[in-house]
Length: 639
Image 1 (cartoon, rainbow, N blue to C red):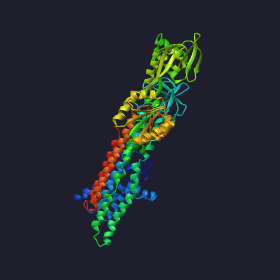
Image 2 (cartoon, rainbow, N blue to C red):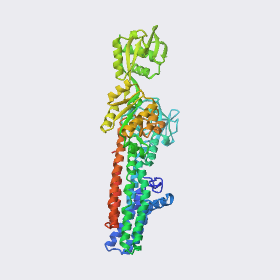
Image 3 (cartoon, helix red, strand yellow):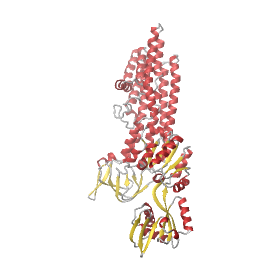
Image 4 (cartoon, rainbow, N blue to C red):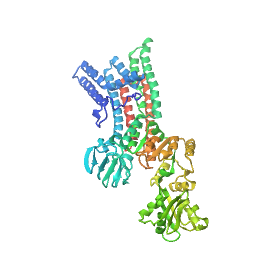
């Protein structure tokens, strides 16, 4: 088909936007009308009801109706881009059939080609409409709060700063921050994550997500037309227009191949009479060659698979930013992952409380009293654990942080510390405590001692939380034959502990950002195509160096989306193997279509030159192969 044309598949042109019904799609509708007229003339004439002249009149009416769209595209491509596309081959074949008096063949050629063209364009339109259909998930109205009163307005009138109400069971009209209330929200429409997420005051919520429990008052942070859902749709539609390397190569091939086919057919028609050979039989072969050699199935072998793959992935919360990136996903041979914020949540939690004297609650209360004014992540973990346990802090004064060591405060005239074991006098650390330190650190935990400078009173261990889906993701990648490598700036002991827990065989630790880039380059030399998974802008250099950079948890984060080739809208590592699966399916289906179309050409071209095929048989085989390639391309869509 004419996919080399820049105006092909333009939903805003005369073809009209797809609105859910096939008969509203002009190319296919025209093809069916022309098919009806052609069939009517053919049947009535052969049944003896009308003369040959009326039958030909029917064909004369059907041919311009059926050929209007694809002939116009071919002529525009010839004039605007100075290229001979497949449409021009079909036009020449139809014209040659008419000159030879083959009216039925000419009409069948125009109608069947128009039908195949219409089915293909309808498939593209549906592929695009599937992602655009996400807009229907956003409500059409919103309840705005003004001076304590509720007022319902169209959702598209919402502006940044407006306060709106989201009742239980309702969908969120646009992005915003909760100013009052707490609830669980289903974010599957945006992130692809089916597990509800707890939200409270100060947290961000997104358009089209479903409020499950409590009423929420929300301050809009984006207008309706610029919310996260609209951003996803825009990015996916842009990505579907980006061509993969295979598609670009085939289109370049088509720009050279199609004129050669036209020239060969003309030579077959013109040269024999100059040599005194009969014209009719060779002219028919020239027309058949135009049809048989037209590389329709080849030229559209990958675009359908690419568009279907990107659209389906987008509906599952995976933004693939172009055909080349989807193809590269299908070629991935190793995956590198950052640790903090990617394999882990980036939120430390208290894992062990080991008192040397007294209870765990007493030790936690003392640590809480010292740390409660600190904003350090480790202090935050202690504060959160104490608050969850309902522990009240002791009265403390002189609260301060000790740079690189911990925190200190005076309680009942005694100065207590919470910090690194090295901050305490070595004499106060008995061998049993040192053994505790060693075991906890092997487990990837950060150890803090609580007590006075001279007398340790206990140990509190903190560790970043491993994402619950991380182990399953690693296992899935390994089952796909893809090795997993951890690249982290964390220390080697902690990194190896996390890797052992997750089943990751290779760990590279203590890496600075520039060292991560070198590590990626080394992995590419060893494996070939390598994907790097990071948690956004902090990993941007490594993401850019990888064959495919995958940023996760990027919903609402434009910078992170820009930094990566693939953006996972949710903090869900299970989407990594899912994205690679989309790539593999697209590449596999595209390659199948290429092989199939080449086989078809290899059979039909010699058959046309030898006179084995008639015009009618050539048309039927040509369009059937094209429709089979379209149908196969749709297998990329995840059901």
